[in-house]
Image (cartoon, rainbow, N blue to C red):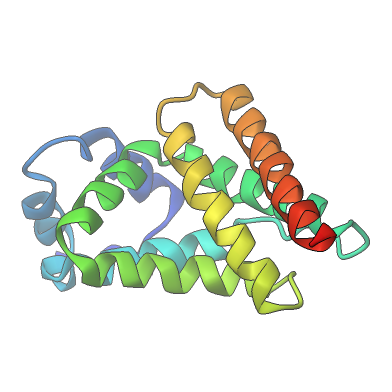
Length: 163
């Protein structure tokens, strides 16, 4: 059997069965290099990297972070079941979490200039991601959560500026 590369059709088929406990067995059957689920995560993230739109560099930092998070979550929406499965597996295996984090960090570095902004974006992304899991396709709750995160961060920054 020919090994299948990750493509939209393959991932859509996997997304339909991602909620099953037997996902890892099915992945191995489709491509034996996925015995290591981390390899699948790497391939999945690499596939997504080509699909996620980078925010315009002309935007403010806050707008870049907002748009970047929305663009990433929008790309993940096409494969929400896979994404949730990876998230759940990463809670059991820190190796998977580190793999995901590497790609998220690389994404934010592609349009943010300093480590403080990248860290801020990462924290907001983690919070927004947890809202997105339960949100619908409109992502209204997710966008509101991101906006509220900026409000909270800005309040803290103002407190520290005034001291």
